[in-house]
Amino acid sequence: MGRLTDAIKHLLIINVLFFIATQLYGDMMYQWFSLWFPKNENFGLWQILSHMFMHGGFWHIMFNMYALWAFGSPLEQMWGRNKFFFFYFSAGLGAALIHTGVNYYHFNEGMSELLSTGLVDDQIQNFLRLPRDLVKAQYFEFLDFYDAYNTPAVGASGAIYGILVAFGMSYPNSELFLMFIPVPVKAKYFIPVLIGLDLFSGVTGYSMFGQGIAHFAHIGGALFGFLMMWYWKKNQFNDNRWD
Image (tube, rainbow, N blue to C red; front, side, top):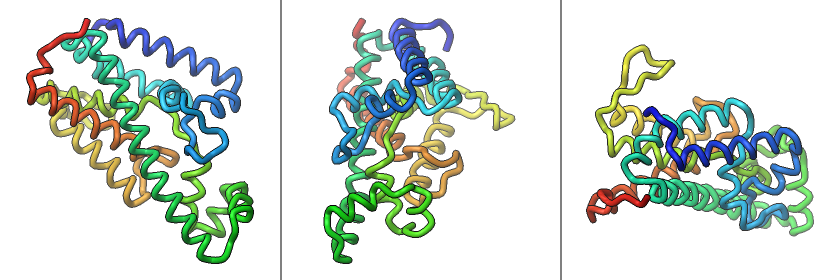
């Protein structure tokens, strides 16, 4: 952690520009650049990449960009700019893949149950247009189905979870000073616990970090980050720089 490296500088600039544009143009930015469910009419292929630069609010982008700088800087210094870019976007794409796969599961499960009750496609489309509060209050058993279709994903968190895993595997004994823990915690302990909490929240639906978090995107980014690091270390590819 220290100086602002080249790849991270460019990522910070692009994220901030997207955030400013979102403050100016609001719903249009979310409609065009968030990651929507592929069956949703708002979905576009470019969103697989563009959603990584979208954020839901000031603290969302602040925490993500701080983590990008704090944990990504030593990795870029070790790997070089191009290799860091490759890892970052690969983890982000992996996060989008896992997140979308879980949404497909919830969507198909809910669709099958609704069709079994005798509803037809037009009636299901009308159901998907209902206000979320009404669905949550009266049709809670179909909330995952509803959210899979209607709730877009935004944020760099999936890519950053890949960065966290890479940092933990590269610098396992680094001591992290966290504002909510009064003593330093080694990366090899903190990062697996953080991922475990996301897995718990994704499976149970109970989140310690608030609502509206794409927990399986975090898991996907961490998983792809782990697989890349494991493969690189196994093949001694991790020793090569891409400047």
